[in-house]
Image 1: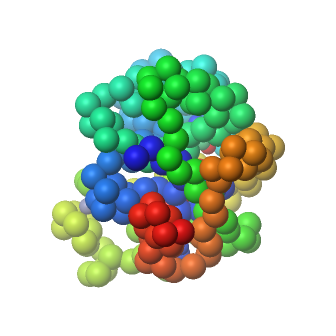
Image 2 (image 1 turned 45 degrees about the vertical axis):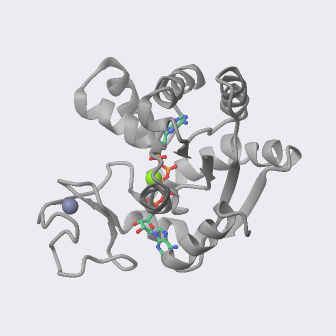
Length: 217
Ligand code: AP5
Ligand code: MG
Ligand code: ZN
């Protein structure tokens, strides 16, 4: 099953992709996470990515398409994948269709998480993650069960993304409106686009997504 989760910064793509990964046994492919790994490794791509991400802009299409093309051909994607953060432009969406056709497969679900813009800054500025296992948390909406201790691995160190400040978030939202939102009509025309209310509780969003993926939505 090949799935795309779409939505602006803070819509819940990463949160939900992680849950679906566990439920369906297919990997989350987050281009944002891949770029953050490149930044940590200090590679040439990572150095460029750091500048682009700190400015809230987008990386070049060609580079991102190549990154995904390499990734979806790895063994763990044999049963499918959940794209989170890709495609982000019409050019990326077209390249993805072309690549999947060439590989003898296609998209099964494209789902937009619909959210009010005012909620997004609050979600993003309050977000943090476990420094050891990467589990995601939020100052208000998703606290660890024991204060200061990761639910999953017991670590006590957490980290925040450098691009999760109000100024960069505004630039990321603008990039979404200008460059990413135009892919919604692209998928709508293909009658593959579905929508889920991303303003609902995290568990409720997961339930709605599963309904669609199980063929009932
Ligand atoms: P990326 O990492 O993809 O960032 P993004 O698109 O801005 O999305 P986020 O990760 O901020 O949001 P999310 O939807 O995953 O939200 P989350 O689930 O964490 O990309 C980063 C950068 O990389 C880009 O700016 C760009 O520069 C570059 N890049 C990446 N891909 C690219 C591409 N294809 N082409 C070019 N450049 C690319 O949720 C947010 C918070 O809200 C969490 O704390 C969570 O706990 C909370 N939350 C989630 N759901 C709910 C809910 N229902 N109710 C209450 N709280 C909730
Ligand atoms: Mg994310
Ligand atoms: Zn952890």
